[in-house]
Image (tube, rainbow, N blue to C red; front, side, top):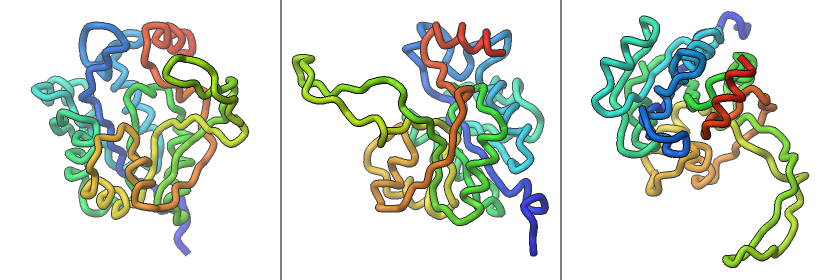
Length: 225
């Protein structure tokens, strides 16, 4: 029997890093903004590489920035040019993954502090047979549905709600098919899979996998570091 430890290194991780990140304010593309003196992308890739399951990392860089991004990352990380949308960036990165990798993770550089334990948890669930897996956390805020005027229509039962994080994991065939069929530019790869009617499983996420979107998030992330 092949053990999980013998299978480590069978995972490829894709990092679409071409987005502008306007909510973070003007400046460089979001993945290249600095957190404690280093780009968010560097923090995110470092944690991917610290996960023994990950044998390949492919980054989709902002158009025209491939050489710049390649220079800031460890040797062996593949860098391709990203597209005009997140979906096209993921598709570009996916095409660059060597054929031997059948487990694919898609990770946001903005979740720069995601612990390797979460990355490994997602990979293990795909390896165990799930075609698609997302890390999630329970929703702790009260959620209201409102109309176009902002008036409350109903209180949503948060017991059935989950906040989704990354990396999201897929078997390669499922993710490739989802992107081949993609008609809308969804920002969530699991959403593309859902549209095909494929089951999406969940595993526990982690508070450290917060998404760095606003200037305040950068300050919080610096404090956590």
